[in-house]
Every structure is written in structure tokens, then in C-alpha cells.
Image (cartoon, rainbow over all chains, first blue to last red):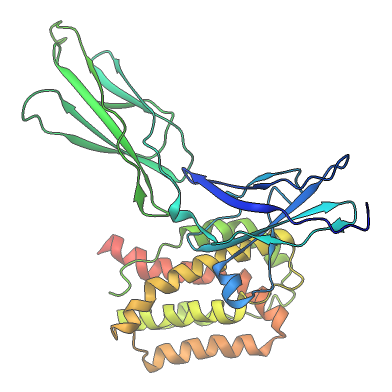
Length: 204
Length: 152
């Protein structure tokens, strides 16, 4: 009934992959009622100098939950506190605070998806678009003993990039890793992909 | 030079998003706080370090603490900028610890003037004006950390 205290959300946790940060919690269940939630955050500055100041999340104040994309709230590489409360009409629960805080430098960086193709005699790579914070370090080489590997920095995904001109009959390979300047970290390399131009002579 | 570089891009981006909204709230158009920054004759890289440290501290300890009467949009931007300033302070802190950031009289006077200008106004107006003048500080950092390295 109305007099009962609305329980606070439990089991807050944050999952961050490729600089996309999602806060989740166990939903509050009141039979026959629709519960909403409010999410708020404070950065290290606020917790150091303005500990009473909490800022409503961009997308989740309110939300039907029980999850919230806080990527647009976590805009710097410092520690953040996050809290959630449930609301039912005029009734609000206590706040639940994420236990250890969150710093985006802990995000999981996955190897990027790549596609290696050829455009005539050009070795071409296309990379997964992961957003403006990501650049790619592409390594490519001739699949021959003692062949030297070359490195190319690609500033954004989703655009075919010409790597080099291929000799006919020779296999060429490429792989890539992501780099996020904001947290100064790289992902692991993707699997290498190889391709070959059939043995026609080079055009004059 | 210490620090060797200052990544202002996160600050620039956040400031761009709130600049107009902040400057509209500045009711003392004929007064400035950071006005003298560009006229200061900084004699050495050490002066630059000292002024950088003191200006970061000015914003962190005085300006960004003011959050009253700010819209949610501006509050979010100020939060982002203030947290970026914490990161910038951590860039400068080692320089101070290695005594690479002493303050000459010129640098000390320049930052004292800025603090005095701030004290002339009521705290809310001073904070709003200083927020609106972040572009002056950003330009000063670019001039002292980026333009020289690119032409060196």
C-alpha cells in the first residue's frame, strides 16, 4: 500500500565496453504498479569540492529502467559516483549508490572488426565504426619471409582505406587495434586477414 | 618545458557547448576578469608553468564551486570542465614537485590581478563572468603550449 516505504534499487553495477557505459540494477517490484527511476552522477570534482552536488543523468532522470546508458554523463577520465532511486507517483525510495565508483579508463576495449578487400591492385581495409573517441592502428604486410610490416593510423571507421598497391600473385595481410586517446589505451589486435591478387602482370 | 603539453580538447568541447548560454547570463559586459592575461609579458617557460598552475587553481578553487542558479545544461558542462581541470592539475603537479614551476614576480602579479578582479564582483556574477572568459584561458594555453611547439 501507499504507506509502505518504496524499497531502494539493489545490485547496482556498471558495464563498460568500447567507451559505452551502462549502469544496471535490480528492478523494484510493486505488484500492479509501474516504477520509474532517477539516475544521478557526480565527478571527482564534485565529490572533492561539492559533495552535496549530484547531477541528473542525461537520459535517465526519469527512466523506466532497470538500466541507464551513462556514456554522455561520464565525459572525463576521473572517478565518478552514480546513484539511483525508485519513484512511484510522489513516493521516492532512498538513493542507492554504486559501490566503488567508476572511471572510464577501465572500459573493455575489444579488437575491432575488420574487412580486408582489394580495389583493383589496391589492398583495402574497412574498420568498424566505434565513434569519435576511437582511432585505429592498422598493421599490414606482404605474407613473405622477412617481409617488413607497415603501420598506418586511421582516424575513423566505416571508410575504406587504401593501404598499398599489391603485386600480383603475392598474398598480403592486415590486422588492426583500436586506440582511445582519452584514456591512453589500446585494444588487442584483431585477427589478421589476408588477400591476394591473381597472377596477372601489373598494368603499364 | 614542464608540463610539456596540455590537452585542452575536452575543455574546448565542453566549453563550446555552454559558452553562449553562460555569456548571456553575464550582466557586467564592460568588466573583464582575465583581461590582462594576454598582455602579460611572460619571460620564461617557468613563468608559464606557474601561471598555468595558478589559473587552474583559480578556476578549481573559486569559479567551478559556484553552481547555484545554473541551468542543468550549464551545470553538466561545468561539471565536465571542472573534472577535466582536475586532470590538467595532475599534469602540472609533478612540475611543482620537481621545483620546475617557481613563480616570478611578474607571474605572481598577473594572477593576483585576476583574483582581485574576481573579488570586485559579487560571487555569482564573478563566477559566471569567469566561466564565460574560459575562452581567454584556453587561447592563452594554446599560445603558450601549442603554437610554440608547432613553430619550434
